Length: 420
Image (tube, rainbow, N blue to C red; front, top):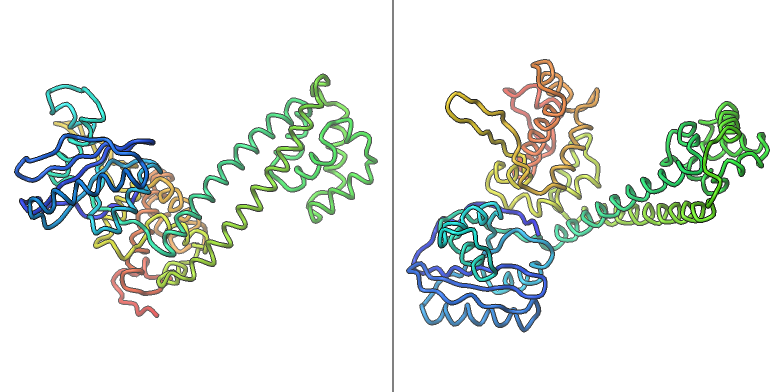
């Protein structure tokens, strides 16, 4: 589970109890430690309600026995197996932090000077990192933001499934009618899908009267395709080198792929409608939507991935969350190239990148900035990444100040603008 990380944990004193959990699918391994080194032997507890109570009781006993004022529980960035426990602890006033798995991997060898890895060792290493002050606090989305995160993730998975189905459909069509892909420019178009549903083989095309085929092409493509494309497809069917044997199973699979693609597209539209409806519950959504080029679905996705823009103190924390923070590896005379870390939420980074493409189109709000980057010799992809970073800064500022976007503000940085 990738969560929204904010400021580092710096205050570790005698009134703080450090708990840590090594997350597992069926069982977790819990551990706690005081600042003076007093600790407990790592223990296992099940990933269910009784197990959570066992871990919580252990923390409560330590808290009461040592007059602890605050409890901090840390974990590595994990998948979905940690989420029930995190929500359980959040309701009990525990401060939740997470540590970078790269850090635990590197620090692990300091314990016993060995790369030895066990479930008993890992929570101790996590506690070490927390004690060193390198853990990051966690913000778990609530309310409408939580709904947007789930809807955004569901939409992304649905899009990935649809892409896999298109790839599968492409391979199947290539076996029995490879020329179709050249004439119709692929299988993603509505006209291509209609033809594959009604006449998937070259013989099916040939059996259809040319006039009827041309008329169907005009109707399905809304006039974009006509007689020339129909004749080209008819000729390709006559000259096709697609396989003749064992086609029945392939045709059935093509039909099933088309059916699943239609179902995926219906589901994606439904998700997007839900995202737009929930977006209206976010007070500052209008600030983001005021930027020309950012639609409602993109805005909903950005809010869902960040969780709550107003929970962050500085824009650098949000940039780090997106994995767009810069780093370089330099030593001596060698000067390394500056790159983005990619250690944040990958979907947030993806949404910002595609939003940046809209920003830099001719007439877009960041077209001028993008052209200056390119004219200075910056590669286009790097320029888009720079635009993504700038866009995130603009969004953060608009939400923080509860303002709407001023069209020419980026071109006139020294002129004060009044925002609605």
